[in-house]
Every structure is written in structure tokens, then in C-alpha cells.
Length: 304
Ligand SMILES: Nc1ncnc2c1ncn2[C@@H]1O[C@H](COP(=O)(O)OP(=O)(O)O)[C@@H](O)[C@H]1O
Ligand SMILES: [Mg+2]
Image (cartoon, rainbow, N blue to C red; front, side, top):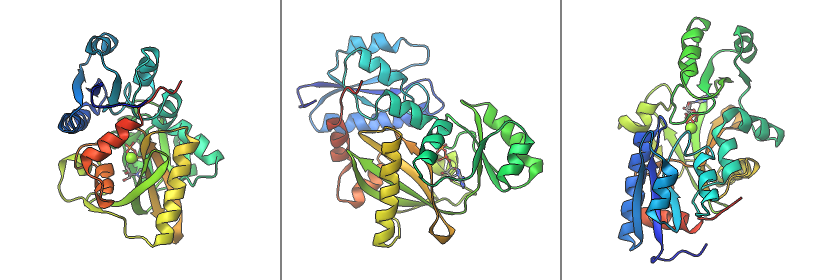
């Protein structure tokens, strides 16, 4: 859709997921930018238990900039509602969102397409852990922000990690721990925007390392050769496309020993605070935060 500044844009944020607080920060940054750019933008803070369909209709918006993260916001639910209301929205459609939010479904498709993966299993018994081998990573299949993720180096710590993951959404997934560099690639409107290497000071890139600590290092662009930038960009774009994603996303990769690249996940509504990774990547390409927000708005569409 061709949007201009006379159209009313709703920034939908908050929501009932475990990433509500992060979403409010994303939403605030996006809303301030749109207003600064001269759009008639309004924030829609989806409160837990609220009838969001009524709130969206009441706001009378021409397009939605979805600033939600996690279940209900990133998994196709709000996208389906916006399709039904015929309100164009940013980010991937119903199917791409639903698949990318589910790490098990994503892995099945990525594997089939030949995108590198860590060895993995849905956890059903100790035999699965033995098959994957130690160290391994336990994670819930339908969460984000590292919520419920544990690295297990010894079988004695497995049970506690499984119980922790079971407290969150989706099946419990166990994955081979792949040592290497964490490279995140930003995709915008069908193209690779750039990449960043994340070096947490913690054991891995935990919730605290993402949002609460200030000792995580971000190398942007990632210190890679031109050929490696291109190769990882191609893998990321392929992962984005295989999962049926559109608009924009952030693809999390690990570059392990011997140049082995594995795809951890595709984030269809990645963090978009001014300090988040995609804005960092955009800045390294000379694109301001506000321009990035506007470029994403320009991708708003109905996809069903
Ligand atoms: N297979 C793995 N090998 C090594 N580290 C991993 C692996 N899987 C996850 N991690 C660590 O856990 C973090 C979160 O995992 P990820 O799969 O991206 O889930 P989330 O959706 O919560 O971000 C990653 O950024 C990385 O630091
Ligand atoms: Mg991740």
C-alpha cells in the first residue's frame, strides 16, 4: 500500500507475551519516530485481557506497525486479525510468522531446504539427550529473548533445564551446542541489509545480556571477509524465504569451526528499540533509525 503522512498508523505494542516489556520499548521508539516524521501515528498498548480487535477498530487506523514480540504478536495471531479487519501491517504474514515463531517447524523446513542446523530433537526422554550429545542447549520451541534457554554441559543438569523450558510455550527442543561466533543478519524488503556479531560477556546471549547488562559487545558490521558476509547473507536470506517470511526479519546464525554456519532461528518481529540489532546494522549502512522505521512501514501490506 502507498502510505503517506495523512494516513493514521497504529503502533501495536505490549501484548500478553513474556516479551511485553521489550515490546513496549520497541513500540515507544517506533511511535516517536513516526510522529517525528510527521505521521499521524497512535500507540495501541495491548493490555493483558483486553479485547484487541475492538481497540484496533476503535483507533480507526489505515495501517499497523506491529511492535509486538512473542506469542500472539509474532506468531500469526495478530496478523490473522489484521487480515480479517483488512488493515495492512508490517512484518511477515500469517504463515511466515507462525512458522518462524515455532523453532521445531522452522527446523523441519530449513533442514529440508539444506540450511545448516545444529543436530536437534524434540525432547521426549533421556535417550534424546544422549543422541544429541553434550554440551547441548535446551529451549522452548515458541519463545524469544532467550527465555527458558539453558546450556547443559553435564547430564546431571538436564532435568532442571527441561523443567525450566517446560514452563514456557511450545515443545521442548534440545540442540547440539555449537561453539562459534554469533552473527545476526538483517533482511529488509527482500534484501540483506547487513550483519552484526554479538559477543556476550555471559556464557551465552541470555535475556540479561540482551537487555540488562552493558558488557555485551556488538561488532557491526561483523568482522568477516567480503566472501563470508556474502555467504552468511545468502544463508540468512534463504532461511527467511524458506520460512515464507516477508517485509523484514533478523536471522540468528552461528559461525562455528571450519566455517560451519548454522541457522538458529528467524525473528519476524525482532527488537526495534534504538539500541536493538537491526537499527545498529542500519546505522552501519548509513540508515537512521527513523528511516528504517519508515522503510519498514512502506512494506505494510495485506498478505492473505
Ligand atoms: N545450538 C546452539 N549452540 C550454541 N548456542 C546456542 C544454541 N542455541 C541457542 N544458543 C544461545 O542461546 C541464544 C538464544 O537462542 P535462540 O535459539 O536464538 O532463541 P531465542 O528465540 O530465545 O533468541 C542464542 O543467541 C545463543 O547465544
Ligand atoms: Mg535468538
